[in-house]
Structures are given as C-alpha cells and as structure tokens.
Image (cartoon, rainbow, N blue to C red; front, side, top):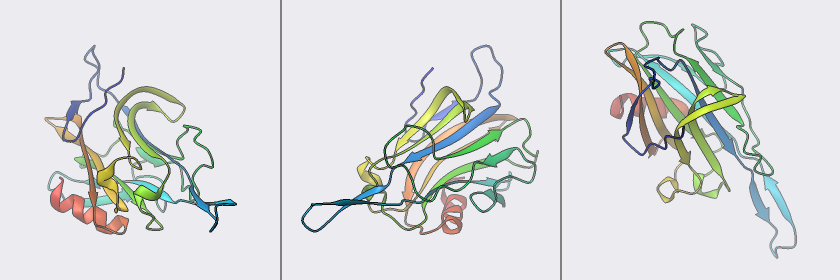
Length: 203
C-alpha cells in the first residue's frame, strides 16, 4: 500500500481490519554535495549533515522532550534514533541514513503530539544537496510495510533557501493516533528554534 499524502492531509492510523498501526518509522536518506574545481577538471565530495528529530508535547501544547542525535531515546524508550550521520552518501543507495522508530504502544500517556523536524546542521541550503528524501512509514528500519508520506526535500523549489523544516505530526484524537503532514520550511537555524516555531504555529 502506498499513501503519498500532500500538505495538510490527515490519516487515521488504523488498518483495513480495524487494528491500530503501532510501529511508525521516520527515514531520511541524502547525498553529499559534489564540488567541481575552477575549470571542472576534478571534483570533490562535501559531506552533508542532515538531522531528523522529533519533539514531544502534552495536551496543553507544553514541550516535554526531544529525540535527536544528542538524545537517542525517549524517556519511556518508545522512540529511538538510529544515530547521527554527518556525511551522507557518495551515491544514492536508497537506504535511510537516519531512522527514528516510534512504538505507539509504549508512549507515555501524557504525550499528545509528536512533531517530526528536519535540520541542516551545517546550514547547507536544502537546494544545494543533490538528493534528500524523507518518508514516514509503517514497519521497521529493515522492512517498509506502507509509506504514509514522502518529501523530496532537495528537489522541491519551496525548500530552496532554507535549512530547517517541519515535516508533520502524530497526534491523539479521541484516544487514537493520527498523522498530519505539514511540509513547511522555516527560517530557523537550529533544532531548538524549530521546535519553538512548531509549538507556536503547528500544534
């Protein structure tokens, strides 16, 4: 099953048989920047450091904690980050460089919203990166069952000139988890500022 959601779409996280989806992944894949010499005789690869993160909020929209390269697990161990990739790929192998796994069955009861955020750590413009794909899917890092949302960050014109964006959020509605895509770049320069923007505008 392939569900390519557009901005503002909302998805009820239940299967056709009525069972709730429980394991969500956020996968990020990107490449290094190719730099050519003055006359184009030689090329070099510039490492790219993109960071996928999530921020947790309660029902009153108060910030609880963030899971990112500096904190690889939530306090309840329901959300785990695969670790920081500071380089990117030499060639597109289509494998995720960073993955955040979310087990919705283990999330603390006070967590009401989970916001997915992307930052370019070295402030490298999204438009200068040869490819950068982020997807939100059901499954595990080793197995993709169904993709809910995909973002082609390097190719979309609206992301040009930005180094931060808010991708989407998981949120509880009447006790059930739902997914809303956001896909908005922000003028923020780091994760803390992007979380503040998400708290102010998108939750």
